Image (cartoon, rainbow, N blue to C red; front, top):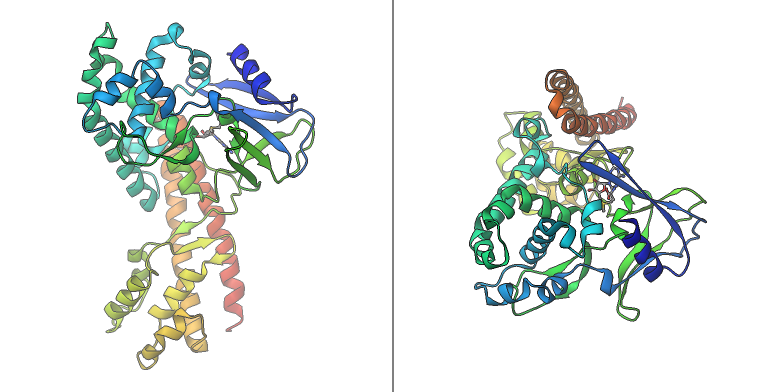
Length: 412
Ligand SMILES: C[S@@+](CC[C@H](N)C(=O)[O-])C[C@H]1O[C@@H](n2cnc3c(N)ncnc32)[C@H](O)[C@@H]1O
C-alpha cells in the first residue's frame, strides 16, 4: 500500500507537502487523513494528481472489461462500468494492479443505504424518505445489471453471481458515491447517455471534509492533472481538509455517511404537514395560501438554522398567517414587505411553537436511540451516527429558539 502511495507521491507532488496518515477504526472501516508537513499558504496547491493515476471509465474500457462493455446492448451506464471494475478488481486480489488502492478503501460504509432498516427508521422523516429512495435506487441498479454481469462469466472461474453479489455492488456504489471527484462530462458510444463525470482519485480521496474551508478543485486541461488548491491557511502538522460542498448534515449523512459537528450549514427541515399543524384550522383561505406557496416554490426547503428560522420559513408563515382582509397582500409578503405587526407577531409565535415541537421530538428520538444502543450492541456504530445527527439538530433548534425569543420581545 505504502509503496503505491509513495509512488503517487513522487509522481504527483513536486515536494513532500503532506504526510498521509491512515488508521483502521474497528475492523471494517478506515479513517484516512492528511497532515500538513510544512504548512500551506492561501492559494497553494495541495495536490496535483496526474490523469494516469485517476480511475475513470477510460481505465475500465481499456481493461479486459472493455470488449464486454462495448458488446453489451443497451450500453451500460458509466456508473455501472466503474462499479463492475471495482468489484472485479477487488475479486482479483493480489493479481490486481489496483490492489494497494483497493486495500485502503473502507470495507463497509455508513451511508443510509447500508444501515439496518430499524436504524433508518430512527432518522428524521425527510432524511428517512431520501434514504429509502436511495436504497430503492441501488436495488434497482443491482437488479437491472444482473444480465450484464452474467455476460462476464467467461472472465471468471467462479460463478458471477457470487462475485457480483448485491453486497459487492453496494460496496462499489458507495465507493464511487462517497469518494469520486467530478470531471467534465464526456460521451462515449459504448456507454449510456448518463453523465460520465466520476473519477476515483487515489490518495486525493483521503482528504476529509470541513465545512469551514474553501478549496478550488478541478481537472486542469493544460497539466492533465486533477488539482486542488486551498484558499485557507494550514499550520505545520495540522490536518488538511477540503470542502465537499456547502452541505447540511442530512445531505452529508445521505451522501457520505457522516455528520459534521458545528456545521454552519446544519438545519432542521419543516415539512408541509408540520407547518399546517400549528395554523388555525378554521382559515377558509388555507388551501389557496398553500397553493400560492407551492406555485412560488415556498413549500419546500423551509428550515430552522443557527440564526433562527430561515427567511423562506418566515415568509411562508407570514403568508399563511395573513388575516382574511389582508389576503390580497400576499405578493407583498413574498417580496419581503411587512404587512402588519400582528402578522409579524403571529408568524413568529407559530415558528416558535414549531421549534419547540421539534425540540421535544428530537429529545424523544435521542432517548429512543439511547435505549436502542443499550439493547442492540451490534448496531452501536450506526446508532451513534444517528445520535450525532439528532444531537446536532437539537443544538440548531436551541439556537433558533433563542433567536426567536429575542425577535418576539420586539412585539411585547
Ligand atoms: C473522500 S473520503 C475521505 C477520506 C476518508 N476518511 C477515508 O476513510 O479514506 C470520504 C469519507 O470520509 C469520511 N469523512 C470525510 N470527512 C469527514 C469528517 N469531517 N468527519 C467524519 N468523517 C469524514 C466519510 O466517511 C466520507 O464518506
